[in-house]
Length: 503
Image (cartoon, rainbow, N blue to C red):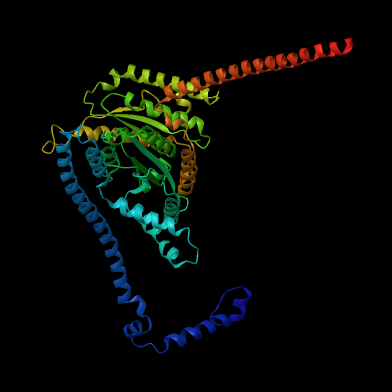
């Protein structure tokens, strides 16, 4: 039978390989009589020790989440206590505003610097990592610091916001952010696609509250200058929506309020706002321009500079979608009533875009929508106030959540239409190139709006014309003067020659 089976290619137990393998298996199992004792003695690592390690790992993840929450609560309480005393002193000093200007200015700085949050600790970790990168690769200190980006990336993956732009120094620690995003890329699927949503607006217009309501996140919220710089937060998309939205994660970027009263006294405050706005809009696929009430003019100046910067900087190749969100508008007919204002705003932006394109000699750009996607009819949303009455006893306005949900569906539709499919590595490279461009672009950011930039350009043209005319007149006068001087020398020599001939 065995020979016949071999002829037909049938595997049988009498084969040499099968018999050899059976012999080895018998040798291993022959002396096993008590399986429980064997597992305890011969396989100790997968018993109780492994179960305890698994439980500790789960507890560590849960404990870390609680730790970060309690740290945030305690730090907020400390900052609140310090701020309370400083604000009382500030009120007292304001009664003598003329006599104690220096004291008020010093107290202003204290009010700005006394806040303490998790971002300060993470910022210090980032600076330690940046410093360690300058050490030799074999250095022990550098090897110790190489674990920090992975921890921060895990925090980002767990839903905690990480600082992208340093709010105090207005800078991006590129080595630190690059390392964190690189580690994040290794933690997720290498082909994971992301969409970037950014909110931008004047201080205390409800930007963080809007993002918290829309995406169920927990950006810090309060009145005054709460958010500093820019924070990024990663949201994982459900499996059911991945194919529909064409992305695996949504990167949400919250920014500090523009036109802050704390920074208004500084000479370069508008330069800080222009740089921040250009950076975050350039990084985003969808930009939410958050506006208080129905007035769009407060963001018009900054948008003009952003568009001019986009035209000027060749690194900016994106064309982000722009949405205007008007907060605290309870009138149901606000969208129809403000149609004329939206058209007028678009006309003004078109004029400024055309002027900026002329300055930069970009003939292919003629209107605002050549730089940013914007439809005045579908890209404007009006949201009622968050509260019914005066907090803290006022109930939450259900209409606020309904309006935000309706706006969220509009954003999801933008995601479906988006043609770009970038992953975290593309976002990292884009951040690096855009930040380098923003750092070196100092000319256009120094202006408050495009009108001032255009006036400066015209003045430079006039000045160049005057300078050229002056140089031309000076050259003509100099040539004439040199000719006269040469002729005077010739006339002085001619009489002497005539006298020599007479003698």
